[in-house]
Image 1 (spheres, rainbow, N blue to C red):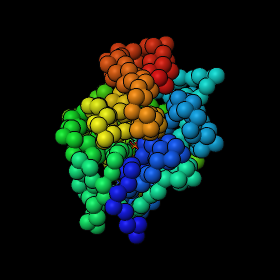
Image 2 (cartoon, protein in one colour):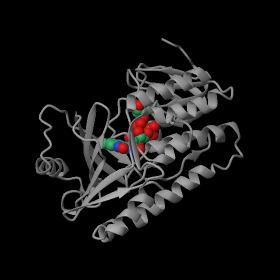
Image 3 (tube, protein in one colour):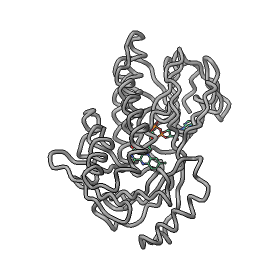
Image 4 (cartoon, rainbow, N blue to C red):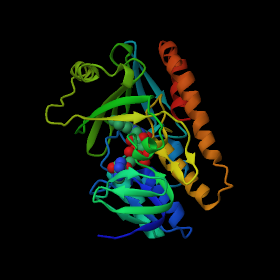
Amino acid sequence: MNMVDRKEVIIIGAGPGGLKVAEGLAQNGKKVLIFEKNLEIGHKVCAGGLTPKTFRLKDIPITLAETISHNVEVHAFRKTIRVSRKKEFLIATVNREKLGQWMLKKALESGAEIEFNAEVVRVKKNSVVLKDGREIEFSYLVGADGGLSIVRKSLGLSSEKSLMAMQYSVPSFSQNPEIFLDKDMFNSGYAWIFPHKESTEVGCFDELKNARGLSKRFHRWLKNQKINVSNAKLQASLINHDYQGFDFENIFLIGEAAGLTSGWSGEGIHQAIDSGQEVAKKILDPNYKCIQIQQLLKTKKIQERIGKPLQFVVTRNNLLTKILFENLFCL
Ligand SMILES: Cc1cc2nc3c(=O)[nH]c(=O)nc-3n(C[C@H](O)[C@H](O)[C@H](O)COP(=O)(O)OP(=O)(O)OC[C@H]3O[C@@H](n4cnc5c(N)ncnc54)[C@H](O)[C@@H]3O)c2cc1C
């Protein structure tokens, strides 16, 4: 085991956010160590849906996409509206394990180190304590540890705004992404069918405050859609979208730990990568302004303030539904 008692930068979590910040720092000469509690990379409940903006970051090659769709079927109020875009695709899907492996390779090639099976159980002002009892000091700490972030908790931040999401991964049965807005089933959340290469991800989310009975409602919806999940395992997870800051002197939060995820769409991979990139720059240059994080917050606000009310009003109108999805989803 790698015995370390001090590192310049410690990153907790090897999701897309943690791997991105590690790469950005290590390639600029910083000594970086990632602690990841899992034994392998990429084990995350996720539909793996990405809009073009993530590929525009030029960090993820389009070759990693398992499917690319120029059409999304939006089902609402007993009708189906086909949203299409010719010039650019609307949604691509990636396999989280493959994405994680690809990002890990880049971080390691840049000089970052990683320890798997290394759960951080306590965060102090200048050190972290691991499950095996080791205590390691840091100059900078990055909390990239997802929706139940221990770093976030150590800063005294709550996570009141969360979504409850659940999904099944079933043998492939669909080629097109579909979104189901159904107020009676999911309130202001939605259900999805996202095609992958060898599977189809079928899931839903609702606000945590409305999550009572969500599993029952989801199964009723699956039955209505005639989707057989009898051999699949239900996976569920919270999605934190409660942003309360990311810069706390020598401690930073990124991605879902920072609550940068969209509370409207549940999308968070893009935000994790983008904020990881920004925080790497901030640690390298304390005067760096993190304009991209401000942009993420602006988008998040527009989606959450306008998206939800609009979702209920406009889905009765084909044209407005197209405008809503083309512009808000891919913002
Ligand atoms: C059902 C579902 C579907 C989703 N679908 C999509 C989608 O289609 N598109 C999209 O963009 N987003 C989606 N999301 C959201 C997306 O998965 C997250 O927002 C994204 O993974 C956040 O990345 P992150 O790097 O911040 O954290 P994560 O990917 O959650 O990574 C955090 C890492 O930290 C590790 N960790 C946690 N605690 C500790 C600890 N104490 N010590 C050491 N390691 C620790 C974890 O093991 C994990 O590897 C979905 C989420 C859910 C639940």
